[in-house]
Amino acid sequence: MNASNPSLTFFITLARVNAVMARRFDGHLGGHHGLGFNDFIILYHLNEATNGRLRRIDLAEKIGLTASGVTRLLAPMEKIGLIQREVTEHDARVSFVAIAPGGKRLFNDALVTAIETVEDILPQNRLKDIEKMNEFLATLSSVSIY
Image (tube, rainbow, N blue to C red; front, side, top):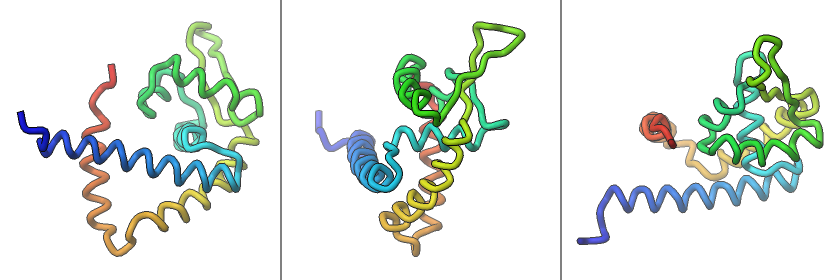
């Protein structure tokens, strides 16, 4: 079989782009705010969520990790006060992750750096192409990881 399958090439290129973007974000966010790319993504989703909180399983789905993978990422974030755990009165088995006030402040500061980083990487004269690609990638990301 020929290895130059366009779909396979697309996914390999997408993996490379993800690695390059993560390194750039880690460098900029880490240097200015002490945040890694994954930390920023978690704070981003919590900031966008209703009441600033999500169930762990919903957060895992949004970032494409398993629930245990998210738990490993959240532990140090909780320890330094970026996020906090909330339990429900009705069902002790359900816990939420909420953005803490310190996490909210740090996220707002880091958001400025993240937008500057994105604008450095993506050509702003191609916004229509970026919007189309974002729509396409959204359809890919809706595929369940399980």
